[in-house]
Length: 148
Image (cartoon, rainbow, N blue to C red; front, side):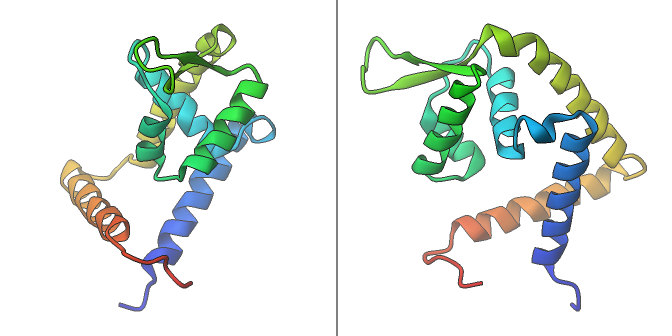
């Protein structure tokens, strides 16, 4: 195979981030990972989401998630609520300021997703997801850091 999977994924990642964030003016306010976390919180509203859930969702390390959550809290987009049964644990919640805006962003995300999969048959999308799930599994199963 002459094409590089890493290069292809990187290109997709860049296009999605720049186009999705650029069109809604969010590039100046949030980065894509911050937006991804807000979406996750919105989709799991009413659930007790803790930092570990976000680490698992994004595959980022604890320190990275902490920094992202601190930045979102500084912008009054989220807040931390101490768990009554385990004071060492914090639940991450969307602020009231974020709720209305986040709902609009979910609608835009759905529209953009529909646009980028237009014309792709369901069977091909199923294969795409199966392959990307395998790639993620292969990456997560690595014992050592990749030397790239």
